[in-house]
Image: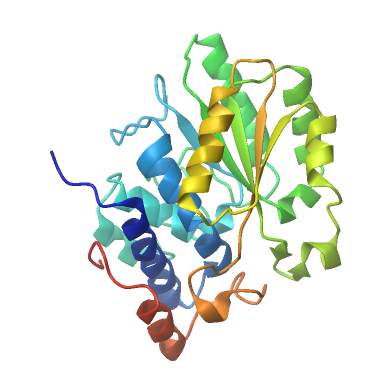
Length: 281
């Protein structure tokens, strides 16, 4: 059996992949990707029951949907590092005819990608549809979803939240990346979200507040708690407080790196702060 490195050792390699991909093409979204690295590692390498023999059918396995598709670098790196496709393919990020487009797409046939998610606000609706399909097929597995906080400003989310709560979609765990930042500034400056927890609960959701959203043990604990509460007529929400740009000092505590690539000198700093652990592509 192949040795699986500790989760803490995978995270810095994921960060290296993110900044190198975005730097190479001078395009992409490193901030949110870095902020969710721990979540992806915890989900794909520890919590989720998934098959690398990818099938769009997805029966008898947990499914993941990425709603905030602009953080594709962390998604692609995680898929490659967990065996869905060769790590070397990360070299093709955002290139013409690549399977690794700036926002995930399905027509290129990239293993692990189940829905195109360039347009924000749609992921929850898709995840609910997948969850209902699982129920109809008597499939006991779980649907996982990651959303951004900025995209909660989209109205479609609230229709979907109301539906999931009213219909008892209780095989769904939706995580919201609450970093408080979006491309034009803080969410409070652009369009305040108010008390997100109270809003989810008002729509009939069970809510777990994850204050340390960049802690792998706490992420695993929150996901495990949510999974233990499935099957009780309530969808599960995890409000995950993260730091955008986490793990790269000059990208943290600002929204400036939402969609900006590092230059050569900045890349060198980011890589020096995250040592190679699994081998660069």
